[in-house]
Image 1 (cartoon, helix red, strand yellow):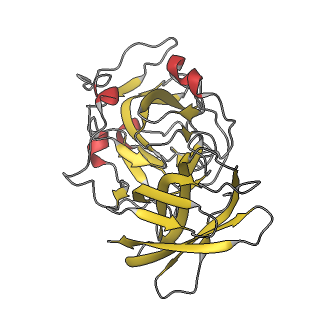
Image 2 (cartoon, one colour; image 1 turned 180 degrees about the horizontal axis):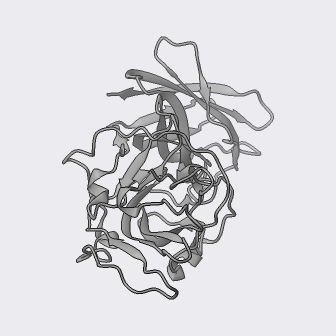
Length: 339
């Protein structure tokens, strides 16, 4: 069986570099891999990627082996266009797989699409990808680490020197480690995308408004989701998603914070917290620290993530702490109803 484990390290590149990005290279590094735990295949209601991703894979079919340099011939599979799988912030669609029998180099061509409303950083988001052996792991390595929302980036997973008994027809590509939410591709199947395991983000129909009468600060979000990935970064650029344990979900809010305060120094926002109704456990959003200057424009695309148990339903209470500069923090509250 084949698995892939991602490497949590990368640097942030500028968004402009994506426009010229070609197929990325994958860096190999050592890591350990657990046993994949595939679940049921995605249902018929799974949404497809938009026009940015549909054209490149159209017409792909299984292809016969072609002659490679050296004494051996590569084994190749071209995957049929399928429903992309959402995993750790991106929709992923396989294009082809190739094993060079001479060099034992194994490559998987794929397309990554950022369908969220925030720019997503590829670096540090791929800690669990593996094929074949725990000694053969890799990660996405592309011309740009940041994929703007609505953009597709071609990339390659490259596994050098896979074992002699590596069999492409029986291999699996596993995204996510043992105990994580996983996506599992049957690489020997031209319809691999149709058989992958994935859990897509679930939209939560809610408008969240939290206002603080004393400071004048107001947060509003109409973009609320439940994700199977952890995320970080409060700003709308370079948000990172990482594999998440299968017994957890993340409540994600993307919204706008503003303050009409005319006080000298403006308003400071320190933290946001969430807790299921009736629970004493509060989950703080790390890294949210910003100051709205007097009469400053609204901060749009503020990105907040709160980990919750996968069995959380009903009301989740939210609190925001803000203060006028020079004063103590004041707490304002709101809530969201989870299905």
